[in-house]
Image 1 (cartoon, one colour):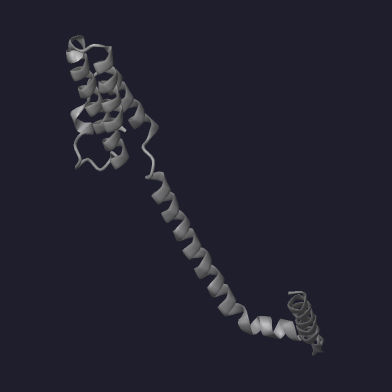
Image 2: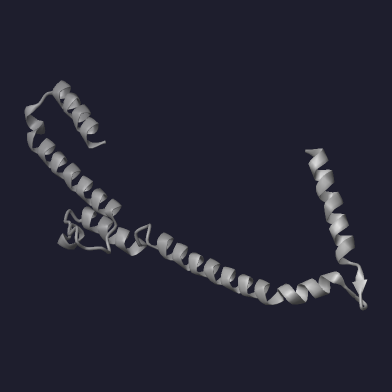
Length: 141
């Protein structure tokens, strides 16, 4: 590792010295740079353009990965009111992410189970109620 680092440093210094030799009062590097400049500028601009495109694509990708705060608030309000708006349950609606749809469906199922539990809770003693709560937790998680 140290030997390869030393070799790199030695070759770097050697190439720097060679490119610094003057020809017609200009170092060799200036002549090589003049020949390579059109190609390097073109490569630089194409690369920066591609990086900009990739950056825009990444922004679009990640901006669409989480639901909007307003959307989440509307869903939470509909749950707190005990009503689910039908447009949230429309799977063809592309504005709602699948995770929000799953959450809505899960909350609806939980509410239905809770309603059924409340309707039948008077017929059970404490032991049966505890067993029922365990089953509900097992199947809803």
